[in-house]
Length: 308
Image (cartoon, rainbow, N blue to C red; front, side):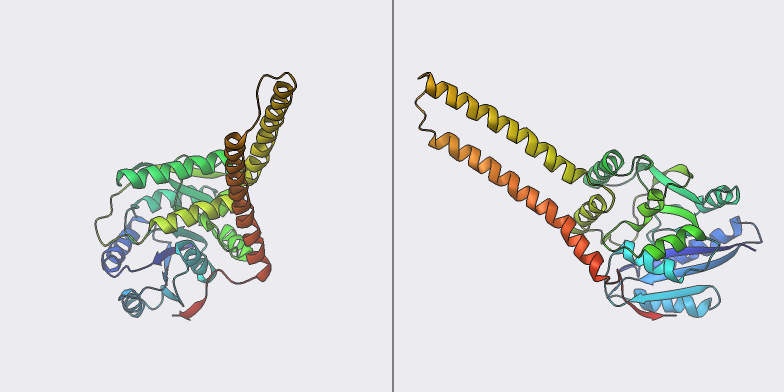
């Protein structure tokens, strides 16, 4: 009798939770009778009534609901990792609490898992979001696919179903500052991608701020790609060649009396360009060194306050 663990990170979600719970419970009817359900709900440090509503859900369905309360806001991907730690299903699905991802797609994903695929992703081929949200998301996904994870499905994903084996492997990694769902792709298991249109959010206000998006962008590249470091090396070589050629030109021109090299303006321009490049390079290298320091400290990516 397979058990499906439904993992839902929640942050300031008091408006969404009642509607989402109702739809998810209704969606159970679409599955075969032998499937049992487990809901692992994570309160990621909300300061509204999110935790209280999750406790009500637990009280109404004590045998199939787990509520994990984190001590503060650690971010949605760390909240998902926390849920993975406490999930016990044979197969697991991660879905957002805002219902922008259709719950009815789970049945199709489950059918692929039954056929032997350990990973099934729902990749976004269309998004009913604002222009700037789409622009950032599309740029992020394209760069991740080009420079980090070449097997990433076009459009990326957050909505996915995966076997307990993959869940256990992610839990054992216990990585900080990463996209834990993209670790599933990094493992290189064969997977099925199901395209869908991501709905526009109709309830509640998104807390996915630009600051958090930028952090995800930096974390993802530092976790899965050395392309920024490679670009520093290549840029340094190119600048070195240009500097050598320019120096050679100045020497020849000076010896032939072609120019009177006073050079203050040119020197300042070159100095400023090289200084800017050095500062950017130090910043990129610093990001990687900081992540090494974080890993060596072995601090957990999240702190659990309570588990119901």
